[in-house]
Amino acid sequence: MAEQRQITHAIQTTNLADILERVLDKGIVIAGDIRIQLADVQLLDIKIRLLVASVDKAKEIGIDWWEHDAYLSTKAKTKMLEKEKARLERKVKLLEARLPGPKTKKSS
View (tube, rainbow, N blue to C red):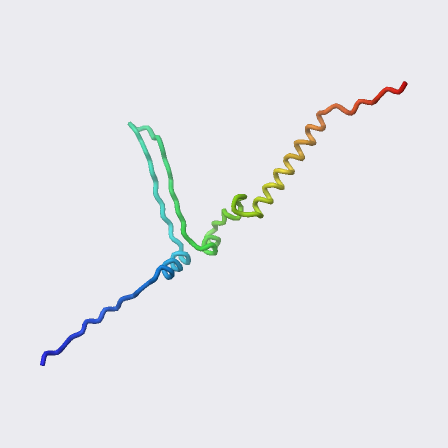
């Protein structure tokens, strides 16, 4: 009788959620440059950098620009508006200082 041999394959299945979890945990950087030149004259130079990571990982490596962007953070927007208000108040005071004082009526 011939001996039957079975070939076993170890197949590791990884779903999209597992891959995404790994990428966000470790982070991934994609970088590229586009340069357009015509007769040794540089017309366009674009540097593209993409970082995909979790918020925690990004903060760990020192990236937190979204916390300071007024379009993405209400705290940053409030801070920006307070600075703008203070700037405008200073400007109004300077303009008021340039105005001549109130004219007094002569009593008859």
